[in-house]
Image: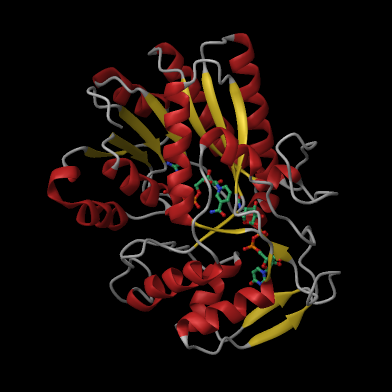
Length: 351
Ligand code: NAD
Ligand code: WQD
């Protein structure tokens, strides 16, 4: 940071996919980091690997706390013993299909957890927050690229938690203008740290495209179902804006620096994407090239609720955060494969 005082950041959900990658970058940038995670969708091994990646000296600046945001006492304990300069809030449940079947679990975890966090932050006068939002708040966009000032709508309970939490953030900041809140709308995070030591490790059968392709490549799934081949796109399959998780991690550093530097920031949303659309079939081809593995596919009907094509306008983040994605699909697939090839069963040692 170049600042003489070391800034102390609370990272909720820091043991998860995007959290671990961001924590590595935060430590390398000179921040002190405390993670709070209930390990609902992650394992402590991931945090151990973060320590291994940053080395013993930087590791001393990382603290892990097992805790659940739904228990206010778990958050309170952390704030009572140290001062945080800002919070990066990743913790949340994110499986769209599960949220349709069990919306109460999503509202309880994502909404109650976040409200508890705001309450405790306010009590300890820590009023700077970077929040994990999602391109899901654009619903099925009528126009692309998606711009931050588009009308927002949600298609499922998970999406509604993100939409509500954005509205809650705007209301809190409006009522108490000293809050500075950055809402980062991630597009489709993929890839892994270039070391191949940390990456995405979903429990059960993956819902998302890249983790599924990865499991086909290592023989854990026989073939990939391609959902939809009659979309009005270049090859009939749906188009998304895939973004390398290390670019996302750097986007959080840029957002944090902006929060500290700009007292007038208020509550503002930024898209984190590459601004480029890639189809499912193009992604399969890129992964085959990076891995040298054949990915057998089965063309299937469309998945309900899916949009035809979604990609970001990256103008605002470029102009105001000075951040731009560095990596393309080739590097995303290279690093995803490196992670998969070195850890075919994720963080599990063996089956
Ligand atoms: P992840 O599941 O890997 O990480 C989330 C972490 O939060 C997990 O380690 C989990 O154990 C923890 N957690 C969940 N509920 C908690 C609670 N109540 N208390 C404490 N810890 C809790 O997910 P991720 O992919 O790293 O996503 C991080 C954030 O980004 C989420 O809020 C997600 O909704 C959002 N997001 C993700 C994507 C994506 O495709 N990965 C896209 C857009 C937005
Ligand atoms: C991408 C494309 C699928 C799996 C989701 C959430 C969104 C955000 C990111 C959190 C689609 C196709 C997928 C498969 C396939 N998450 N596909 N076969 O749906 O763009 O976004 O993750 O905020 O909220 O909805 O991502 O990876 O699931 O799908 O053909 O086995 O791949 O139909 O066209 P999506 P995805």
